[in-house]
Every structure is written in C-alpha cells, then in structure tokens.
Amino acid sequence: MEICKSDNYNIYAHFNIHEFYSKSPDAPDCHYLNDIVMEAVNYVREYYGVPVVITSTYRTKYHELVLLGKSHTGEHFKGNAIDFKILDADAMKDYQHQVETASGEVYTYLRQLGVRGFGLYDEFNHIDARSVGGSHTDAFGSYAFWDNRKKKTITELKTFREDEDGIKPIRKQLFLFGLVLFLLLALFVWFCVKRCVK
Ligand SMILES: [Zn+2]
Image (cartoon, rainbow, N blue to C red; front, side, top):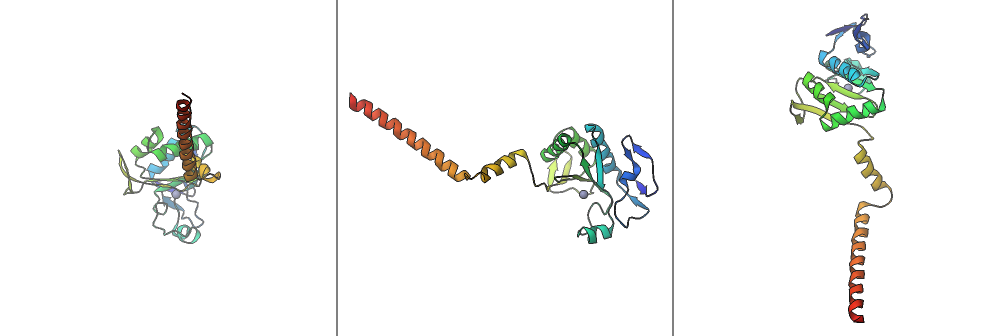
C-alpha cells in the first residue's frame, strides 16, 4: 500500500500508520510498502503480545548507497522489507528459534502470508516479501535466510565455550583415550596378580 508522511491513524490495534513510513532522511512524501510484511509484523506483535518497534521499512537510494554502502537493489529499496525489534527477550528468542529451525506457529504463518526473506541479527529481525525466494526450501517453496547474529544459538555457544576454556577438544579426546587405556591396564594387572597368587 502507499504510505504518506502525513498519514496518522491506527492501521492495527498496536500500530499507527506513521510507524511504517520510511526513516530515510530524503524520504519522499509517499512511498510503497508491501502489505505482506506489514501484516507479518502485526502478526508477530499480536502473537507475542509484547511491544514491537519498526526500525526500517522503505529505504531510498541515497540511504542505501551513501549511508549504508549497499547496492540499492535490496528489498528495502523495493519497499518489500521491514526490520523490527521485539522488546521482550523471551519472545525475541522464540521468534528467532522458530525462524532458525523453519518451524513453529509464527514461522508457518509468515510463510503462508508470503514472507520469503528472513534475516536474524542480535538486536533486530529482517523480513521481506521478495518476488523470488532464496537458497533455502521448505513446504512453501524457496526462501532466503541469513543469520548475522554474533551470539548464535545456545548449542553453538556451548561448543564455543568448550573450545575457549583451555582444553581443546582433541586434547579432551586424547585424555579420555589415555584413561581407558590405563583402566584396561589396571584390570589386566589385577587379573594377573590374582592368578599369580594362586
Ligand atoms: Zn532489513
């Protein structure tokens, strides 16, 4: 739909239309924004029942090229993308987990709506309704997914910590191997001693 600078009404229960207006410094008075991503953000807001802040929608060529150093051919430039923050740690974690695992109620609903691009960041999420999907495939077809988080998942964090605590995984394996060898040797000696006594 078309969104204009002067628009001011509640498009959804928790969103005023002006929250979807471009944040580019040279934004035109009116610009296009894909209805799918607007519906998607509203769904996330309603599903979790926590505040959701829209951080980026349509971006101008100047915004993309000069301020962000991007190619200006992206989905924000086309008015197909929204970046948003979920202001609740548990809800943010759940949303990102669903997207990461391509499963769950929210993920499925967004895919059904027509969201074909998902980006995860530490502080926010990107969704877009690109016309052609990406290199990932699920029951709804192809889609784009990228994970630009520094924290990553809990499992990865655990692995990372294990690598960082001074004991390298290979050393751990050697230690376990040595322990097993020692036990076998002890067992052998014990048997031998028993027989020799007899
Ligand atoms: Zn984005």
